[in-house]
Length: 257
Image (spheres, rainbow, N blue to C red):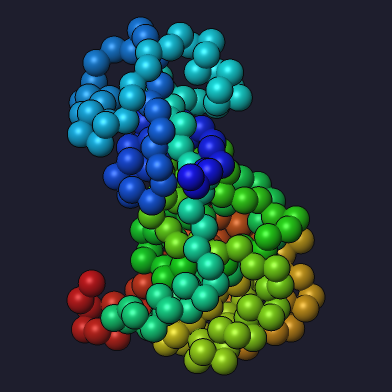
């Protein structure tokens, strides 16, 4: 019998998306016993009943304990661990899509909240997949899933041991690699051609792109900063860049989404 590692996903949208995506085994649903009926909770319970997931009523202390004090909104689910895909599967996804592949490469993002925000934007912007380093970076934990409002359940995420080697492989597959970095020799993001097969590299909080990663980018892009601050949050910068890529691709096809 196969043994699954388990974790707790919490919050109404993350639980709903985990059940809707059907990429994990949902083993049990926990509801706050004093939770007031609402359309979103009713939908989750109906889905649980259809899929024969047991529902257990618990008190708030139990929910706080199992979610480690997270904002659970009266509901949590015990599920199998996050379903990462292999990098080889991601390469196959790149060949199967109907438009040029777009791979988001995260260079050691440390904050689960930032990671969750980035995964939410990545899902909304239609990325082919996301690449994370396996070490010294935030993983797709329940906190990151909560911060993504459940969008992480729909994103194809691969963990790799070496980002530079991964970038080289993506180049061999025909992708150009653009690094998001505010340095003098970077192009303004609206002036770069981002329409073709592309890997977008986003650096970690504070440190930005690591030297070897930056050196293996084909070109760098930057966002204009007109105020007194010298940088943007990684999640905000990533969102702007991803939607510029989407804008250019839409315009290339005559403004059709």
